[in-house]
Amino acid sequence: MTLLDEYARSRPKSAVGHAPVQRRRAIIDIGSNSVRLVIYDGPARAPFLLFNEKVSAGLGAALSETGRIDDVAMTRGLEALARFALLCQEMDVVETRCIATAAVREAANGRKFVARAREEAGLTVEILSGEEEGRAAGLGVLSAIAQADGIVADLGGGSLELARVKGGAVHEVVSLPLGVLRLGAIRAKGKGALDKYVAKALKDSGWTKVESGLPLYLVGGSWRALAHLDMELVHFPLPVIHQYQMPAGRAATLARVTASIGKARVKKIAAISGSRLPALAPAAALMRVLVRQLGSASMIVSAHGLREGLLFQGLSAEERALDPLLVAAEAEGEAQGRFAGHGALIDQWITPLFADDAPDYARIRRAACLLGDVGWRANPDFRAERGMEIALHGNWVGIDGWGRAMLGQALYSNFGGGNALAPGLEVLASAQDLARACQWGLAIRLAQRLSGGVAGPLEEARLRRDAGGIELLFPRSHAHLAGETVNRRLRNLGQAMGLAWRVTARD
Image (cartoon, rainbow, N blue to C red; front, side, top):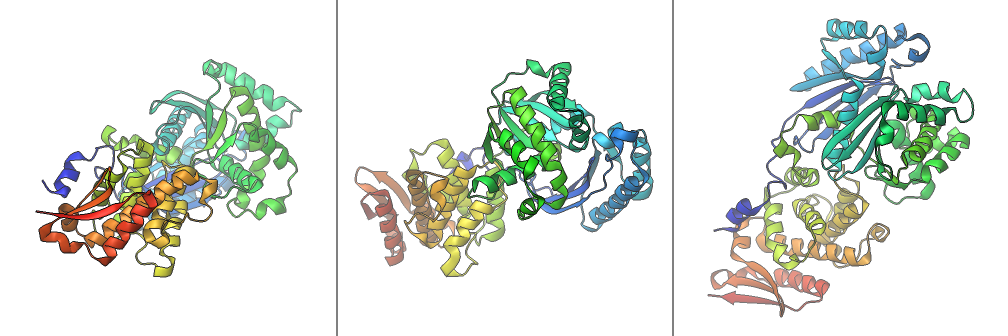
């Protein structure tokens, strides 16, 4: 049996390679603040954003006063839909789903908007119920954080959805009239009015029966803007919002800060758009109240929400079980690398050296192997930095700051960084962990040089670890595969692992 056969037979179905590529899907999301088009490409389990455009239509701006979508907002929203429908057609989108949430759901003239969307833009608008909206948001979080166990809070312009997620499923769901466009009127009733309103809404909905002490998973643009502000305040070293975690006490801090911070300072934070500025203070006030009344243990930001949840909802059980990080890493490695399928073979080949790796280590190591050739087009003097940048700043999900640091160190070492720890990563992972990731990178580097990017040499040679250290074994017919460069890379790996190394030829 060849290594390729062995790999195909033994690789777990929950890893990579089983997710069909479903091209060009679009979600048109008609919210209370904005109308947004997102076009996705790539693997169905780990789609990437091909195109993303938002129009601030303000469909829900007058809803609390008039109960209607005003004429100007309706026109602006319909013009956006007409443009988005044409873009989907021109960009060869194969599946478009157009959904509307609180503003259209509650407005007296919401049905009129839906009818005009069909007539003027040729779009069938699906009005989601509050429960459907909350369930999709919960699935969106699970699509990106598979082990999520807590309460999802999806804050939009017109409503707040809460969903209990646990064991890979969405359980209790409730929709509350607490969107950012409504908070001003509630808070204007006086000190403590928001606390009382939220407490009553939670009690009336039956949500007080849900256990406390859980993480609060934050979904929605206003929450993300607050998280970006918190990153700025604490000087967080990694400007990636997904799985950014804040202790519960930061909610009160953000409420105090946003009540007094000047717009000029916030405008300097590139990640916060100007359209989000008016929502910061009310969203922070709601965050403070929610965290206290739900007894939240912490707050974790999810980059995935309603739209990604709708995509996830349409997958088979087998597709949902795939690891989104590994699916995305495989797709990226195949797109940027020189040798199709080679990263997966390398992972299989170097595994005997790291048999004691825990599952979370082995998962990041596998991702590093799949991405092990993505930096080859870069200037040789900067390949190590390029590899680290892809790991740290890539649009990955299913990975936190520690995982990004480990992946970054592995790629840094693989692309020429040697056994030195990459600068800055020590704030995200321990030196001991980074040293292990360095070993992965050097092992990948050895495999690439030995094989030349083809399967044959890896099928003939074997790595193993025993009491004597690391052994690279060849049949005598292929002994010449061991040359000066291969020996040097094997020596570097042995030194990084603190082990003796040897090359053995056998009959």
